[in-house]
Amino acid sequence: MIRVLAREPFVAATIDTLTLWDLPLNTPAELIGFTYTLSDRYRGRLQEFGFHSGEEISCQQQPGFGAPRVFRVSNATYCLDQELAEQVLVRPVGASPDA
Image (cartoon, rainbow, N blue to C red; front, side):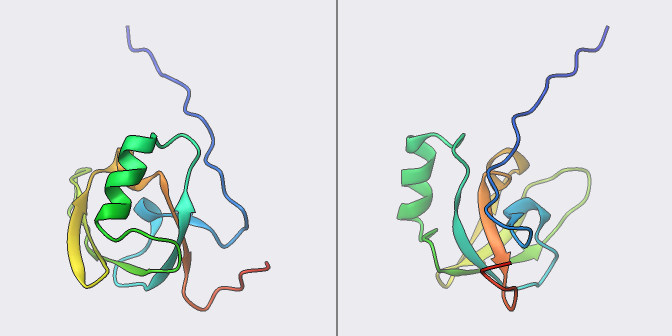
């Protein structure tokens, strides 16, 4: 028997807000924050790596089969798995912040 666990909804302030995992390949975006479900430990570690509100971020590689994706932020590249990338909120560059 397969059990399906319900996932909590993400905190998204506007229609233009995406999770980092949903960001299309090579599309620049502004990092706007994290979901409330992200633990303080992970939030602090990501901020140490340069994941701050206002930073420009883009997806550099999207391998198939659910493999971790490569993101560029603060002039560095990092590989994040789906569970973590879905807790980082971004807005594509050019999207209206007041939509």
